[in-house]
Length: 181
Image (cartoon, rainbow, N blue to C red; front, side):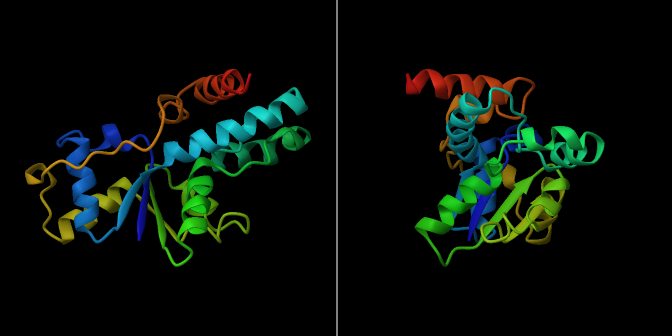
Protein backbone atom coordinates (compact mmCIF):
# COMPACT_ATOMS: atom_id res chain seq x y z
CA UNK A 1 0.00 0.00 0.00
CA UNK A 2 1.43 3.34 -1.10
CA UNK A 3 0.47 6.69 0.38
CA UNK A 4 0.69 9.57 -2.09
CA UNK A 5 0.72 12.80 -0.11
CA UNK A 6 -0.13 16.30 -1.30
CA UNK A 7 2.61 18.91 -0.80
CA UNK A 8 0.43 20.77 1.70
CA UNK A 9 1.04 17.95 4.18
CA UNK A 10 4.16 19.91 5.16
CA UNK A 11 1.98 22.56 6.83
CA UNK A 12 -1.13 20.57 7.76
CA UNK A 13 0.19 18.86 10.88
CA UNK A 14 1.82 21.93 12.39
CA UNK A 15 2.09 20.32 15.83
CA UNK A 16 4.64 17.76 14.57
CA UNK A 17 7.53 17.58 12.15
CA UNK A 18 6.74 16.44 8.61
CA UNK A 19 9.17 13.56 9.06
CA UNK A 20 7.18 12.36 12.10
CA UNK A 21 3.95 12.48 10.07
CA UNK A 22 5.62 10.29 7.44
CA UNK A 23 6.60 7.78 10.14
CA UNK A 24 3.01 7.84 11.41
CA UNK A 25 1.69 7.06 7.94
CA UNK A 26 4.06 4.10 7.73
CA UNK A 27 2.89 2.94 11.17
CA UNK A 28 -0.62 2.79 9.74
CA UNK A 29 0.64 0.03 7.44
CA UNK A 30 1.77 1.86 4.32
CA UNK A 31 4.75 0.33 2.52
CA UNK A 32 5.92 3.66 1.15
CA UNK A 33 5.06 7.35 1.21
CA UNK A 34 5.50 9.21 -2.07
CA UNK A 35 5.09 12.90 -2.79
CA UNK A 36 2.35 13.88 -5.23
CA UNK A 37 4.87 16.59 -6.13
CA UNK A 38 6.82 13.89 -7.99
CA UNK A 39 3.70 13.50 -10.14
CA UNK A 40 3.74 17.28 -10.59
CA UNK A 41 7.28 16.99 -11.93
CA UNK A 42 6.01 14.41 -14.43
CA UNK A 43 3.02 16.56 -15.40
CA UNK A 44 5.21 19.65 -15.83
CA UNK A 45 7.34 17.78 -18.36
CA UNK A 46 4.27 16.66 -20.33
CA UNK A 47 2.39 19.96 -20.07
CA UNK A 48 5.42 21.92 -21.26
CA UNK A 49 5.41 19.84 -24.47
CA UNK A 50 1.64 20.23 -24.84
CA UNK A 51 1.87 23.97 -24.20
CA UNK A 52 4.56 24.38 -26.86
CA UNK A 53 2.16 22.86 -29.42
CA UNK A 54 -1.09 24.47 -28.21
CA UNK A 55 0.15 27.98 -27.44
CA UNK A 56 -2.47 28.41 -24.70
CA UNK A 57 -3.44 25.86 -22.10
CA UNK A 58 -5.14 25.62 -18.73
CA UNK A 59 -4.12 23.05 -16.18
CA UNK A 60 -5.86 19.75 -15.54
CA UNK A 61 -4.40 19.44 -12.04
CA UNK A 62 -7.36 20.60 -9.98
CA UNK A 63 -10.62 18.71 -10.46
CA UNK A 64 -12.69 21.60 -9.07
CA UNK A 65 -11.09 24.01 -11.56
CA UNK A 66 -11.65 21.59 -14.45
CA UNK A 67 -15.34 21.22 -13.52
CA UNK A 68 -15.64 25.00 -13.22
CA UNK A 69 -14.23 25.53 -16.72
CA UNK A 70 -16.35 22.74 -18.21
CA UNK A 71 -19.59 24.06 -16.71
CA UNK A 72 -19.09 27.83 -16.70
CA UNK A 73 -16.87 28.29 -19.77
CA UNK A 74 -17.48 25.24 -21.97
CA UNK A 75 -15.89 26.99 -24.96
CA UNK A 76 -12.58 26.95 -23.08
CA UNK A 77 -12.80 23.23 -22.25
CA UNK A 78 -10.72 22.21 -25.30
CA UNK A 79 -7.87 24.27 -23.84
CA UNK A 80 -7.72 22.14 -20.67
CA UNK A 81 -4.56 20.07 -20.66
CA UNK A 82 -5.11 16.44 -21.59
CA UNK A 83 -2.60 15.29 -18.99
CA UNK A 84 -3.46 13.51 -15.79
CA UNK A 85 -3.26 15.40 -12.51
CA UNK A 86 -0.10 14.97 -10.42
CA UNK A 87 -2.05 12.60 -8.14
CA UNK A 88 -2.99 10.35 -11.04
CA UNK A 89 0.38 10.64 -12.80
CA UNK A 90 2.38 9.42 -9.81
CA UNK A 91 -0.22 6.75 -9.05
CA UNK A 92 0.05 5.49 -12.64
CA UNK A 93 3.83 5.34 -12.27
CA UNK A 94 3.51 3.35 -9.04
CA UNK A 95 1.01 0.93 -10.61
CA UNK A 96 3.31 0.40 -13.60
CA UNK A 97 6.25 -0.50 -11.36
CA UNK A 98 4.15 -2.47 -8.84
CA UNK A 99 0.93 -3.73 -10.51
CA UNK A 100 -0.38 -5.31 -7.31
CA UNK A 101 -0.05 -2.10 -5.32
CA UNK A 102 -2.85 -0.12 -3.73
CA UNK A 103 -2.46 3.64 -3.99
CA UNK A 104 -4.14 5.95 -1.49
CA UNK A 105 -3.98 9.70 -2.05
CA UNK A 106 -3.88 11.88 1.08
CA UNK A 107 -4.60 15.57 0.67
CA UNK A 108 -6.67 18.55 1.75
CA UNK A 109 -9.27 18.67 -1.01
CA UNK A 110 -12.48 16.67 -1.16
CA UNK A 111 -12.67 17.28 -4.93
CA UNK A 112 -9.96 14.61 -5.27
CA UNK A 113 -12.53 12.09 -4.03
CA UNK A 114 -14.55 12.80 -7.14
CA UNK A 115 -11.52 12.89 -9.44
CA UNK A 116 -10.38 9.41 -8.49
CA UNK A 117 -13.73 8.04 -9.66
CA UNK A 118 -13.14 9.28 -13.22
CA UNK A 119 -12.57 6.56 -15.80
CA UNK A 120 -9.13 8.00 -16.67
CA UNK A 121 -7.97 8.01 -13.03
CA UNK A 122 -9.69 5.01 -11.43
CA UNK A 123 -7.19 2.41 -12.72
CA UNK A 124 -4.42 4.15 -10.79
CA UNK A 125 -5.86 5.57 -7.55
CA UNK A 126 -7.61 3.15 -5.22
CA UNK A 127 -8.84 5.61 -2.61
CA UNK A 128 -8.59 9.21 -1.44
CA UNK A 129 -8.60 10.44 2.13
CA UNK A 130 -8.32 13.94 3.53
CA UNK A 131 -5.83 15.13 6.11
CA UNK A 132 -8.66 15.17 8.64
CA UNK A 133 -9.36 11.51 7.89
CA UNK A 134 -5.64 10.75 8.25
CA UNK A 135 -5.70 12.41 11.68
CA UNK A 136 -8.71 10.26 12.59
CA UNK A 137 -6.73 7.16 11.59
CA UNK A 138 -3.82 8.27 13.80
CA UNK A 139 -6.26 8.83 16.65
CA UNK A 140 -8.02 5.49 16.16
CA UNK A 141 -4.67 3.67 16.38
CA UNK A 142 -3.45 5.80 19.29
CA UNK A 143 -0.51 7.03 17.23
CA UNK A 144 1.00 10.15 18.77
CA UNK A 145 3.03 11.40 15.85
CA UNK A 146 4.93 13.90 18.03
CA UNK A 147 6.63 10.98 19.77
CA UNK A 148 7.77 9.24 16.59
CA UNK A 149 11.19 9.16 14.99
CA UNK A 150 11.70 11.08 11.79
CA UNK A 151 11.45 9.51 8.32
CA UNK A 152 12.49 11.77 5.44
CA UNK A 153 10.25 12.64 2.51
CA UNK A 154 12.34 13.67 -0.44
CA UNK A 155 10.97 12.33 -3.74
CA UNK A 156 10.30 15.52 -5.70
CA UNK A 157 11.81 18.74 -6.95
CA UNK A 158 11.23 22.24 -5.67
CA UNK A 159 9.12 22.97 -8.76
CA UNK A 160 6.92 19.92 -8.15
CA UNK A 161 6.35 21.04 -4.57
CA UNK A 162 5.26 24.56 -5.55
CA UNK A 163 2.87 23.35 -8.27
CA UNK A 164 -0.26 24.25 -6.29
CA UNK A 165 0.73 27.80 -5.43
CA UNK A 166 -0.29 30.72 -7.62
CA UNK A 167 1.92 30.58 -10.72
CA UNK A 168 3.42 27.26 -9.68
CA UNK A 169 2.34 25.28 -12.74
CA UNK A 170 3.70 28.03 -15.00
CA UNK A 171 7.00 28.10 -13.11
CA UNK A 172 7.30 24.31 -13.30
CA UNK A 173 6.45 24.21 -17.02
CA UNK A 174 8.94 27.02 -17.69
CA UNK A 175 11.62 25.07 -15.83
CA UNK A 176 10.77 21.90 -17.77
CA UNK A 177 11.09 23.80 -21.07
CA UNK A 178 14.40 25.29 -19.92
CA UNK A 179 15.70 21.79 -19.07
CA UNK A 180 14.70 20.47 -22.50
CA UNK A 181 16.61 23.20 -24.34
